[in-house]
Amino acid sequence: MSKVAHYLQEHVTGEVLTSPDARRYFATDGSIFALLPAMVVYPQGESDIRKTARFTWQLAERGRVIPMTARGAGTDQSGAALGTGIMVAFTAHMNRIVEFDSKSGVVVVEPGINYGKLQQALQTHGRFLPPFPASYEYSTVGGAVANNAAGEKSVKYGSTIDFVRSLRVVLANGEVIETGRLNKKEFNKKLGLSSFEGELYRAIDTLLDENKAVIEKSELAVSKNSTGYNLLDIKRKDGSFDLTPLFVGSQGTLGIVTEVTLETANYNPQTTLVAAMLENFDDLQAAVSEIREKVPEASAIEMVDKHLLEMVQTINPNQLKGIIEAPFPAAVLLVELDEGGDRAQNKQTKKLEKILERYTQKIQVETDPIDQDKLWKIRHASAAVSAHISGTKKALPIIEDGIVPLNKFKQYIEGVYALFARHRLDVAVWGHAGDANLHLQPFLDLSEVGDRQQVFSLMNEYYDLVIGLGGSTSAEHNDGRLRGPYLERLYGSELYAVFQKVKQICDPYGTLNPGVKVNVTLEGIKPMVRSQFSMEHLYDHLPRT
Ligand SMILES: Cc1cc2nc3c(=O)[nH]c(=O)nc-3n(C[C@H](O)[C@H](O)[C@H](O)COP(=O)(O)OP(=O)(O)OC[C@H]3O[C@@H](n4cnc5c(N)ncnc54)[C@H](O)[C@@H]3O)c2cc1C
Image (cartoon, rainbow, N blue to C red; front, side, top):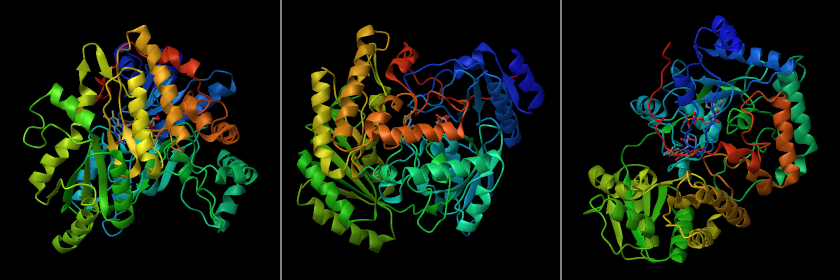
């Protein structure tokens, strides 16, 4: 054990591991990258994280920088749950529901709680957390907050940011702050503090004032966005101030979250599912735009394309038997309604059918949960593609989460098809049609030099495409190491410089998850690409001392 690990073991109550086995486990996440951490700390509580942060701060003051990376379940696809220093692993101990108010639906949790388990607990009280990611069975709430995660219900309910009321955060120097909206008087009090917290409030306030014009211009015309730092909603015209939006989506690069207070929504188990087979992307774009405008009750507007269905048919001919048969339409659109009872949903369905009938006669409406489950299998077939191994090639998450304005949706899909054709790759597209947010994963072999080069040429062309269409490089999966190099291209150099200043203010010594989001270059990440991609780490890991 190193001196640093010894020191930490003596001062924290949780476990500190340096065994090759533990370090190797944490060397990969859901991304194409690998980085070996020096040690793993399993905090028993906030005080362990404070002590670890204070220690790394003191070392950094003396010129030795040891990075701290917060880690939930490690499903991150952008490489943000990796680091070379101390891995702070939350799932082992900091995984409880602290408080639930059944009247208001507000829930307070520790960040390492499994998202699926929290969801189950909430549903027994008739509530749920709508922006759950598709990975909710494995992933944690802390990871969702740090990524500003979103999912199929976000089209109606919004992203994680819309549900986080406040946070407890350990700052780079080990101080703890509580975020939440402050009125003018409360904010002024913070400005007067002589602590690091006070310094942070003063510096962020000045930064926002000095860069007001460039920040206001920065909002992208997309319905979800998890890139950059969210500077738009910190300071409001009424003089109120809230650092919560800054920390949500910051991927552990500005502070480490130790407690999350979340709002929840009413859970209605009764839903209606409508499927429509569409023959071209003009119709797809027009139908989705109309649904968004006229059926606000739509709680999911999802799609898969023909190529995905053909791929699934080849991989496993029985998987969709009796549900959908070849020849497949250009796209299958699935629209869910989750508001009210029978009568209300009937009315909404009629509205929906009236829109869809203008584009297709092939419409299916299901109210029975078992029949709905069968239809959902069409959308969930994407998992078979992600998990498929084609010879030595695997589906890689490198261009998996772009989003564009809805009126550019058709151009986006066609652009993706052209990109894959240019690269002679099989294409399959699925995702959140209501947000024009597509998921796609090219099949490549990371052990082949040519394929590794192709990763970067594909990324360059793809991110040029989404940025050119006025979109965002990531709707829900965030920047991390993968998309950090494209952040300046996305927002321009002026705003990027503001992001760098935010990082400098909150993390002056670069101890908090460095190499993620800002100050990342393509040359810097190339050596981190692993030679084999796999998701084998997706099982529970608990400390073994
Ligand atoms: C198959 C698959 C499907 C996915 N689907 C979706 C989807 O639909 N929507 C979506 O948004 N994402 C999706 N993801 C990406 C990812 O699963 C989610 O963003 C998830 O919320 C991450 O949670 P985690 O617990 O795995 O976090 P991790 O991977 O452990 O960490 C993610 C980030 O959060 C930071 N972090 C974790 N805990 C803390 C903390 N306490 N304080 C500060 N920072 C912290 C980490 O440092 C890292 O930067 C998917 C991934 C996979 C593999």
